[in-house]
Length: 286
Image (tube, rainbow, N blue to C red; front, side):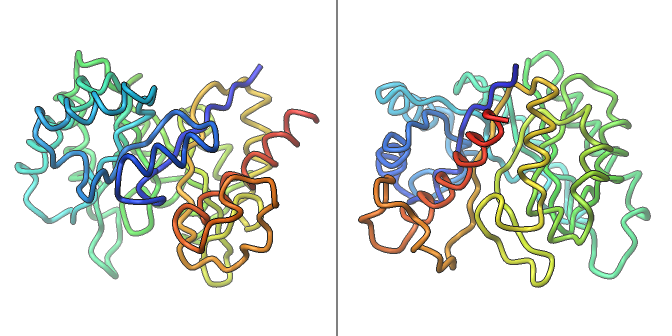
């Protein structure tokens, strides 16, 4: 039996942590994939400041599903040593937050150059991440992202196999693969299904790559969630709506949280939640 647990990039609602928690409470979501909090990325806070944030979360009954770090989101030719130190700091943050996952990337490749040229350097850097994380109990989640080494299912699989670690798993991001013009289903899913431990929920269309609510694009969201359900997936579906320019607010049902809000982060988020919950209900009833 599958178990989908909803989480969210709450900084897409508002930069203020209290507002983030207020809105998530309205939707019955008690997990945050924490990226931006009070206007700054979590990984750039001191450990004492992180403890203060944890106290605020605890007081409201919130937990982190993952640290939404920008680690690995630098150029492959950029200096790696400061980045590795930031990673070690982030491991301490994860420990304080009692969080087992850190979201990460596999480095931007110079425009116009073949990613395979930089494969060895990507693998070398990731092996240093894995070595530094050894014994921490933290799982490193690689997110497929346009422009990095792991932007296609094949190169994601290469990285995951090369690490050969129970503590390196895949995030499956529907929209990001669409924006790379690759096939999510069945091709992408079939390649990565044994490594998927976390899911980012946003959808997109091939024609111009714009983001839409889950199930309304070309990301095969319903099909893949259905397959994950059949496999007994137990884990997070983390909403990353990216609907800042979305105009379809008429689709928001009158009894939905956010219906009476003006256009903006909280209302866009409400549309994203509504779309995902409809898909989950449909899958559960199949």
